[in-house]
Length: 136
Ligand code: HEM
Image 1 (cartoon, helix red, strand yellow):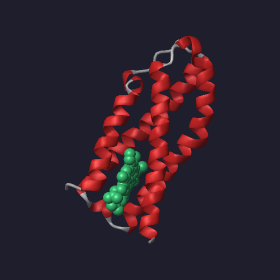
Image 2: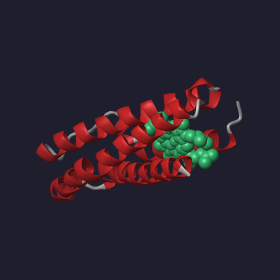
Image 3: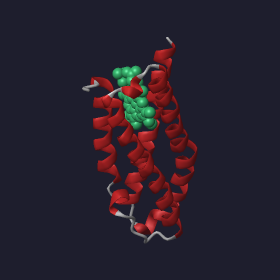
Image 4: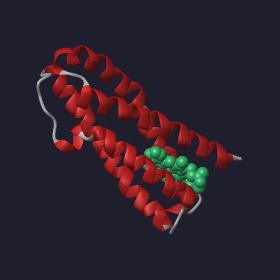
């Protein structure tokens, strides 16, 4: 029972985290500089309160599942771990660039941050396949 509760809390956190990262990526890449400032100030508060908390929950419940149920020794988990570390780094960069772009809406972030939408979408496909199929 505890296992299923932990897994549910993990997946709920994942969905909220990934949703928040997609909103960040959309605003960074697609909202034009003329209307950026207002949108970014609203988004930064959501990012701090909701998306960052969900990221923490995904890590907390994911690590508990990995350690308590022994998944940390498996290949799929190692691969998934690398991808979620990259996603967490991307989230940190998104937050930093949203802060800078709020101050100067004409700034242009690096490609890794600008391409947030495809990076997050492809990562979600790979991470979910790894976690559910557990191919190795
Ligand atoms: C933040 C770091 C993360 C860690 C440490 C982590 C770790 C884990 C672990 C150990 C499991 C248990 C597997 C099982 O019991 O079957 C799991 C399940 C799962 N994770 Fe993650 N995960 C993380 C992030 C994510 C993200 C970002 C997503 C989705 C985008 C995700 C999607 C899933 C899914 C769908 C399952 C359920 C697999 C199943 O029911 O068979 N995880 N995760």
